Length: 392
Image 1 (tube, rainbow, N blue to C red):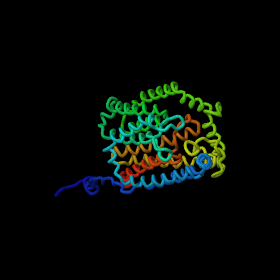
Image 2 (image 1 turned 180 degrees about the horizontal axis):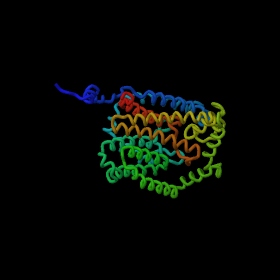
Image 3 (image 1 turned 180 degrees about the vertical axis):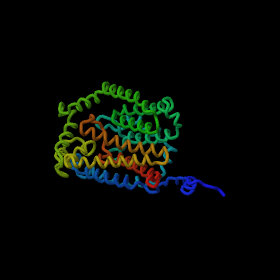
Image 4 (image 1 turned 45 degrees about the vertical axis):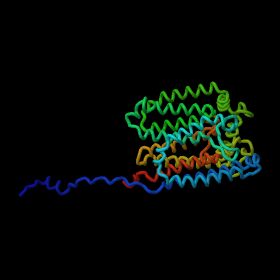
């Protein structure tokens, strides 16, 4: 008969072998909060566009509902496309990313020759006033997809080296920058570079590699400004928009007046004064200024909270993605939304010089809106395959 000590008997009674961890449960439905916030921002954007463009639309088209009606049609079409795309497995984009990127790049370089001139810059391709788009908007999507797929397929050791992990991507960005310079599209260049670098950072590139890249970017931006009279005028009007109020400073100055006039509570929906042909482009770049005048600080804060939550959901989906490609793809889409929104808000508030950065879901532009909703569709599809961390 075996004789057990007290300690051995206690261990035998209480010890339980470790149980194997259950595999993470994969979600099957799309992210509900993300979908709700997209629809809420879309509805708020249409309301802001309607009240901001009412007078401007009648003055230019003799139809006060022109911009609102067209944007509403594109919004309905975009929502339909978003729901369709949300059912398409996002891994399929990796198979044709190279062809999509090359096709868009060719369009980018053709734009200065065959594009339409609008306000001194050739950035649009299209047919008449009915249909036109900026290839640079498609390039943002192409960079997100291509960079995400290529980085996800690279070995970690290669990705963390400068020669294999940084130089090829920088060369691609330089080629894109060449096309953007021909289009005089500095804001688009900044957005594309920022998106690409954020995707690479999340992919695992060493952070100190960004120091020489950042220094080079600053020198390139300064050189561009010093050699381009158009850019010099923008910077001068940014430093003091009231110095040349009737010409180069008009846009920024009227935007400041509109935002300041709103105060805390605003003048009331539809009661804004600066949209009466004072704010330039109230349906596009400066729609947020008109909104601030009518809805005040509280209304502006509401917009910021909605954008903030939408961006948070995007990064949450990226973090919960079950593979690296999905993580980087969701990161790129969320980063693009955050950068473009912040750039527009910085412009209208005077933090940045006036550039052509539209506010997502708010600024007029049917094709741009459909591209934004298509990106949200991709994000919703990624959310269908995220790991449900709350169940583990």
